[in-house]
Length: 199
Ligand SMILES: Nc1nc2c(ncn2[C@@H]2O[C@H](COP(=O)(O)OP(=O)(O)OP(=O)(O)O)[C@@H](O)[C@H]2O)c(=O)[nH]1
Ligand SMILES: [Mg+2]
Image 1 (tube, rainbow, N blue to C red):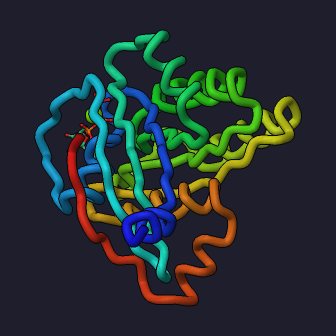
Image 2 (image 1 turned 180 degrees about the vertical axis):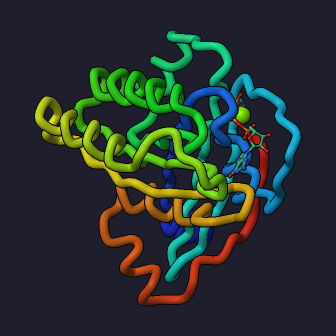
Image 3 (image 1 turned 180 degrees about the horizontal axis):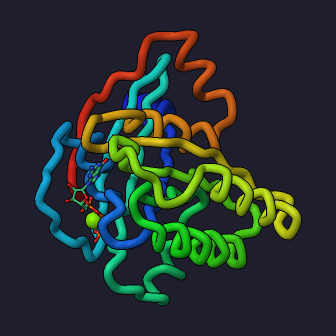
């Protein structure tokens, strides 16, 4: 009975990260989960992370699926899209091709889930020179809205290297699924990481 009461306070959220190889998906997740950053690049196949955020008397259990951008496995992508309602699409400011991949991924997600929640993350903003503008990303999402009026998106600029807006990614992703979460979080105590595990 006591255990049931504890469990009922946990909110479960699942997010999947998509994006070109090397845009910094794993770096962002590792920054959040382990508070670490590595300069060396090790391509991912697929990893799943669990992370808890405690905020304002709520425990949020985040399941984060970190996909690899090197190889496109359409069947794996489709499965991830079917099993998830919120998507974190990562681009890198210094990689114009990541804008093209982002457009493809957004299209694939929306075809399968017209009411998807999409957080658009432009990473590596510590690099000054940009190969595309934020307007190009936002304009594309607004164009999609005419075809898919039910989907919701947010836009965020980050740097895993300088630890800029990394935790905000996950706050904003939860907010997309539970509108009002950020307002409650800010009104109460600051969210504190409680635990993390690689599954
Ligand atoms: N300057 C800068 N470099 C970054 C940043 N984030 C990641 N990197 C670097 O970019 C390279 C690729 O990072 P990863 O996190 O492995 O990229 P990924 O998107 O997970 O790549 P795949 O797993 O192959 O899809 C690494 O050398 C990182 O150190 C950032 O915010 N700024
Ligand atoms: Mg990776």
